[in-house]
Length: 191
Image (cartoon, rainbow, N blue to C red; front, side, top):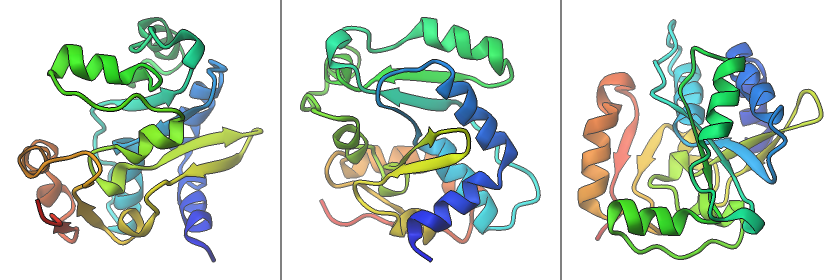
């Protein structure tokens, strides 16, 4: 079985995650995916045999619309999703314009991305540089530009494409990775 099929099987067996995918699909956004921590948390909970789901701070719904790249943070989409699943905090972002958001809000210069896959490749850790979208009513398409080894291998590794050591250390602490999943290996590959 391939890693992509393993990931599909894990996520398709999770009713809550599939509800998220169907809610996201209802918006019909261009080139969209659920991404980031919601995938990591769901997969690691299953791989670590947790009896209860790790509470998710927010659900990242990313999409790529170069025609309307000025709409980076889509509050209207978040409100529509809250009407469908009110118990979920959604974070909807158009990755076509996210470089402007980073510069304005964080003072950080990152490149403009040419695709959703390119944007996901720059997520802060390799285990969250994964997106999943719904195809039809139940099939999943996996976007994993840096692979699935770390996600499925319970490895938290700094994504050297994007994240410096200090930011990585802050995220480890903020996300409470060691406390939530003690069996996860933490790797910071250099400067």
